Amino acid sequence: MGSDPVPRVGTARQLRRHGVRPDRRLGQHFLLDENLVDLSLRQAEVGPGDVVLEIGAGTGVLTAALARAARVVHAVEVDRRLERALTEALAGAGDVRVIWGDAMDVDWGALDPPPTALVANLPYDIATPVVLESLWRLPSVERWSVLAQREVVDRWLATPGTAAYGAASVLLQLGSEATFRRAVGPEVFAPPPRVESAMVALRRRGQPPSPEVRDLVRAAFATRRKTVANALAARGADKSAVEAALTAAGRDPSARAGDLAPSDFPALTGALRWTS
Image (cartoon, rainbow, N blue to C red; front, top):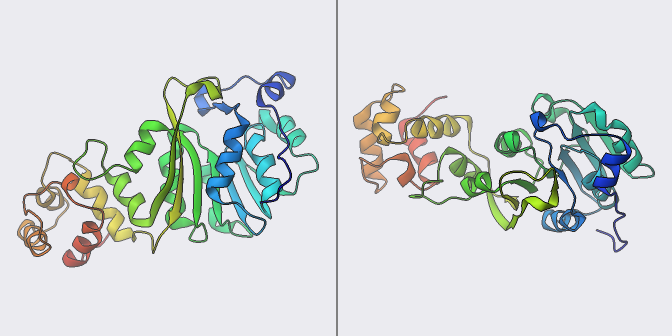
């Protein structure tokens, strides 16, 4: 990233100028603190060779900074009311390709050039699907830096045996490792959300979990109070085979999904020859 200062967009000013009121139905909480924009870029290590995917461009506060730091920015935004504000923020910016539509309906695989990083202030209701889906649908992405609900980030980074640990924890940790986490208060957004937020940076490691592993993980956590053997038996697995596989791996045959480490799930998938 260059040494030139990142120009300020001024989210609150943009919203007033264009008469846009945040739509809670879309999960809109626009970022006001542009110091967090700088931090997000640093944690994602965005440089001049990067192609960045941004979900939820909003008024362009983050998009404009990304445009100065990266080679190409694919910016996705669903709310057409923001078109004038976004266009104004990006005047004279670098190569920004705005995609109007729901991020979960966008064909990410068709993005050209393919993104190397995902940086976003994510709408809370799609934060987990966006990050998880990008792990396996966008193999070119090596780094993530996102703002999301703090409770969601806690689940992503949770450890076995804790209440927050679940399928999302396992799947995310199998394909990535957290390199940064910071709590963020509601006062830096407009409107302020009723919950705390957090910024988290991730880096890809190894191959993402296969469809078979993903299916087994979700089956194992579908009924948290059941043992893994009983949960998988409900999906057609041989209960005794599951218990034998757990024993062979040095695990309690009556273990629940929340007791197993992320690395146990690919091993169990292989031992059971699980198919999705």
